[in-house]
Length: 455
Image 1 (spheres, rainbow, N blue to C red):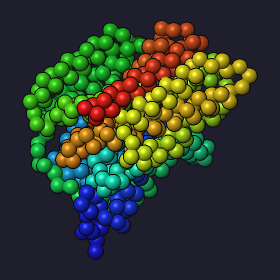
Image 2 (image 1 turned 135 degrees about the horizontal axis):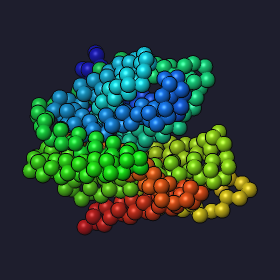
Image 3 (image 1 turned 45 degrees about the vertical axis):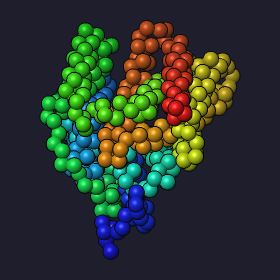
């Protein structure tokens, strides 16, 4: 009996097909996350090898992010239309093929174009991974399955810089992208075991897709230009907001809109989105602030800085599966509120504690922060996914990924503004304090779900 014909449980795949499908999903997630971390670390090396300025080399990252953010929601809608497995597997295939183009790129423009194609493939994976998880596991195991997903993301994020450094120590930068090929091959080999859902056949509205691009692309580019060319940057941001307003007006009456307004009308889903944006903003601002605090404020070198930042993702990796199991027994609003509070406490101490003579207290603060973020992330993602009807799992996953990227962008913008407005010596600690406030806000918004559930 082939994997494609093995029986389904009532609300998930039967074993052993479920285990094979889980490997494929987790490997695809790791593929996208590790590649992003590796590319960030290797920017100076690629800039020198290609003979371009550091500022120009940043487009290796920006081009990828632009493709992801513009196509997340359309990819989710396409998955609902054509079937989740078909679009998910196509995304992995495109990502893997684009990795070959990246490795063979002779110049920066070609590399940026190949990275854009990678971003398109990554958007299909990121927007549909929640739907794939929901259709792979039975309802009773969904909390721990989301925890395993968060564990994979955390471990891949932590390992990415180390993998990149190890490759660059023995090989040239193209091998950073060639390493994707065996992982992509494993996913494609195991892909017949993935759940084959039937698509709705609903056509994508071209104007909505265009307005969605007009919403996100100008804002991403405008934020990037805000410091060097503020007038142009603000103009692009204003254009993005105008396109967003037009998109909402066009999509509002539709039963299954590109931007899932139908899901956002449900208070529990909307609160999960808001709290996700807040906590991801806090985490990203912290990850930008901490290196500057350690290197410029405390005089540490890059290796020491990396060492003291490692406890955060490792603790997230430990907390995520635990919170996934707890979410099956405890209110997700309560868990997310507690997670936001822990994240706030860790960041507050990191901002205020006088680190003179020893940096060991910072290890404790980052562990508390990582535990809080891990405790928050899995139950919040679970609530977002289960707040949506199963046929709208693609839209829920797309919105989940969009909330994450929105929060990450806001966190980076926040630190850019602080570095521009505050003294360089104090900006990182101010950023950590603001991040603590955002984490507290995210936790408070999550607790509002407990009140809703009690009504």
